[in-house]
Image (cartoon, rainbow, N blue to C red; front, side, top):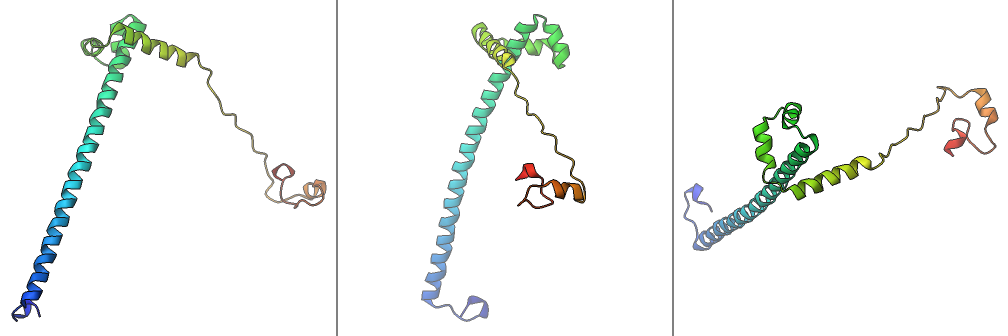
Length: 148
């Protein structure tokens, strides 16, 4: 029996439908509340990350201006107006700028690790008779000795 058939709906069926609609509405509200909490937390983390990035950018500007001693040179290198660079560097203390400079110097003094590429031996497209004859006993003919 359904209302679409034109037949009357029993009170038990009506109560069942009302409970289902209420359960769906409650679940929707729970999901909405959870979504709000998740989005607010993500926004909070993003704002903190932005604040950190902005602070680090201001510190980098202050360090660059101190290292170059010529704001116009830094401005031309970075294509940023001198006024904007000076405005960004102003809130950074001299002590903090010196700390950033020291960290940059320490990083510059660190030896760079280089990965050396091991040249791959040129493998012939087909195994030669000489290669299979020189292979030690017990090794397959087409596998290089150093790969074992």
